[in-house]
Length: 518
Image (cartoon, rainbow, N blue to C red; front, side, top):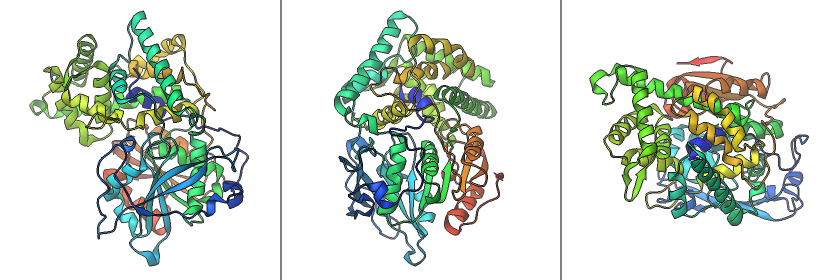
């Protein structure tokens, strides 16, 4: 089955949905955005946050903030269908940490951490220490976008079915495996339609952007101050296109390339993960005997991993409990470790363990990417990811078309190309049509948006930042380059990046276009 690693190969770079034709809209007044009920003027009833739901990943309630402040949560009503603003509404779940310096408070800073499908109600508290400096003058706010977590989260298969689904082969080798693969896609799509069919047409990125404008108004802000990471940069770009004059201070980090179709984006991402693996292997070679993996060159280490994956395809090894480490899980787990240099040690250990017949660590890493909780329940990360991706992206690949692209994907990456290529079929059986090939993020008249690209980013390769800046428009997209590894620069702690972002968000100082860190 297409694991989230393969799914995200298209999902992170999903084209943006237009469920109703909105491209001609300019800044919306309260009545136009919220309908006759004036949803933009609704009062949010903030209260202490409960523990995250299973759909959000479970766990305990958010820990108190520095100084003893507590997290607050609320629900906000938005139209299910913006073409019928006085029709049914749905509830979006929000979370906030109030600004420390109330006298010099700028407003709310809204975060989206990517996916699509990631829960902001769990994401913001878990990452809050990275952004605590920004809380000096902002209320830090995030949310579960529609279809995610507590915001009418999309549901597909149950937990037991998902265990079986993710263990299946995502790189079929013969006709029988191809049939199992396509049957699995159809079964998954049928389950999503059966359990969440009413919501599926309305979970796309354009509706999420319109939700953010209602959120801006309900929070009492004249402008939307925004921090988007990964897919969150695409969501932010669509917002800027629809509401350019409502953009305040905005930062895009780990930037999606808005000019690439899902196929080109998947191919580029396969190359990005391949590069990240080669960087890991180079580090292993430099460390010599301190590295436990066999091989004295990058190619030899890569050969070892290719051989390991081929062995797992034929015979999985013991994983966790009664679950085995399959080739699909191993590929997924390897990809998970390449999001940050800090995880390279787990990649080394996981590969060494699996080679010795112990698949526990790589399976645990795969579980993390799939949204599997330690108790065996699943968050709705992957279900929301599929739903948003497939309503956004117009492309629908049948078997013949996907197989015709496999040579290019194999050439792009020996490790990931096969899985990413088959992942093109992820929306083939989806019950809702996609909307366009690429999103429009042009935003003439917007305030400057700081666009940060990392040279070693595997998931949103560096070239995408330049293209996003160009598409936003002259004087709007301000590009900053971080020469480093990982998915996301600000959270990496580089002082140069942090300084530039903080100066803009806290003091309004726009860095020079083309700034390079470090």
